[in-house]
Length: 393
Image 1 (cartoon, rainbow, N blue to C red):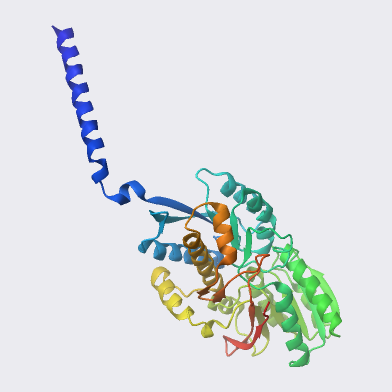
Image 2 (cartoon, rainbow, N blue to C red; image 1 turned 135 degrees about the horizontal axis):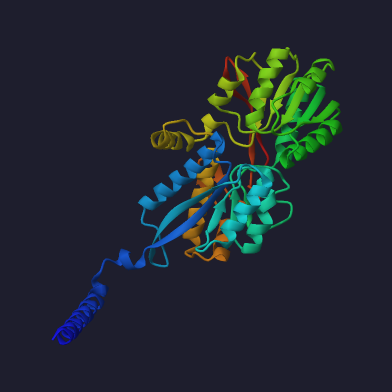
């Protein structure tokens, strides 16, 4: 009896299950289309996200994705939802290579990568993304060595370093009447490259390079090189390093009473930098930034409000460029009407749209067309734009 009863139960359960499955299959065409057709698209982000500037870049990329997901984006009739996958490369080229290999080989794979945040990491990973056929849009790498190899998968949101440095030297020599320069780099790829460019261009323009020095990008002891500048009659120190060192360098210059002016190159146009650097004399610190003056960018005001509302803090240059990079990628995906990497790369090369930082378009090498630069100085403890440069190409 038990066996027969058990067997009967099994037969009854099986019949009910089959009936239920049949009913679901019958109803499937009536389910909402989004259930069957929505697809998630992964976008990678790589940078030293524990640092303030790169973290703001990651936040801005996420803001662009959040805004896109509020719209009904469809590719081939399917509703698309974007998701950001971030990885911390610690601004280290070797770590960046591991991150790039992760993005290139992960399943499911990212559609494209916003990154890396500095030139050394971007240069180190460009071939990996190129071999994998993945578009790489760097928001804030501005070494020309990033685009020189000619990979058609790389896109440089900033203008290259040579134009920016040449414009700045002209202003320093012709307007400020400075002639004697010291050049200090941080030993990194971008630092060395910029220092080389500065020495070559300044020498060709008739300036004197009093000395060139290289320091570790992890040190905060600048006493030896600053005392040398103080005792050598230098008019201006050109320091090409990251913002995490630049503010400490300025503090040491003030403490040692170094009379030379300072020119820096990284993303230092922030209140955080000024607070860390301490009280500064007017026209003592200068910065060349590959961007229009932030107050002049028409789209920046709306972006600033959205970023402040989302994260409770002002945006940075990194944030603006990451926001533009992500929106440019999403626009290219929509233009291609495809998630195929090759179609997206072709669309990125063909696209021209307005962005927060200006018109977004790239040449065949992935360099931004019509790059712009702004020279800032500190006056009354605030950054002030004093010169705007354009370099059409």
